[in-house]
Length: 367
Image (tube, rainbow, N blue to C red; front, side, top):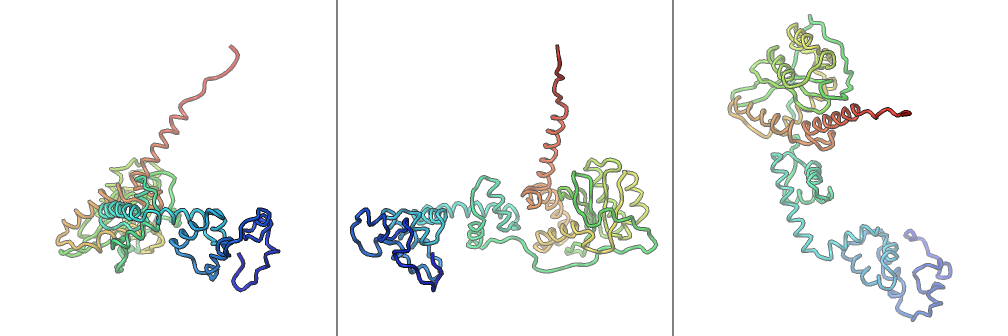
């Protein structure tokens, strides 16, 4: 099509396969002379050339009028509408009641997924869950239906960042073995750890946690009234008890808080063959994965609830971490799988590789 404002060449300059009846093919066929709008789709769709995108219903109607004479694709070329787009519009306009019924059914599924997530899933995770369930649906459509239903994911409404650790100037910190490269090739190769404050009606208490970098799984956590070495050791012991920790293969990374640099904590790491690694004090970039988890926990749980007692808060944290975050909450970085699903897939793959390595081909040779 010609850009707006540029004059078109006359009929004699058009290529032979042009749709206009003045072309050589039409003249040879001796086609009956008809109105300009009937013989040339350009005569009917010229009003689309001002740059505005035609609405779907108008395009479908116009193509229906002209397709028998000129064909669908030639008319769409003049309209500058993709064939796939046209057939999508045609499906919508052909049976709008069916489309509305499908939207209503899909909206119910979306609401169920959103409800199961505790109201935390936005459209990306809802869309991913639908695809996991075999639903072939567009992201924009999910966004529209969620917007129409007033559903949205959890998002940050306020910031509450209090430095959680203090260093001991007399302690010698471990070297930084991670250097902000938070990647791991397998489970139990790199753990990151930190502690944060949680509010409740009885005051503020502390939550310490340990996260496996490979799958983002929280492998250990513990609550206490005080942020001391016992709290930090409790989270570590939980991880050691629940995981397959092998001598010399695991790095434990934290900031340089006094509890992590304490002799008791360093000795417990050494007893289990775990290599200590430390970033700087209270630097979120040096422990970005734990800061990421704290942000998620507070956005999806802490800021959306109010607990009268610490017991209520701890029960909610247990349900969130062990009953949701580790087991069911899908993450984009994990291919829209939960940490447990991601690790299970890895273990299955490793087992298959081990079986393949065991099966050796029989030696060949002369008999």
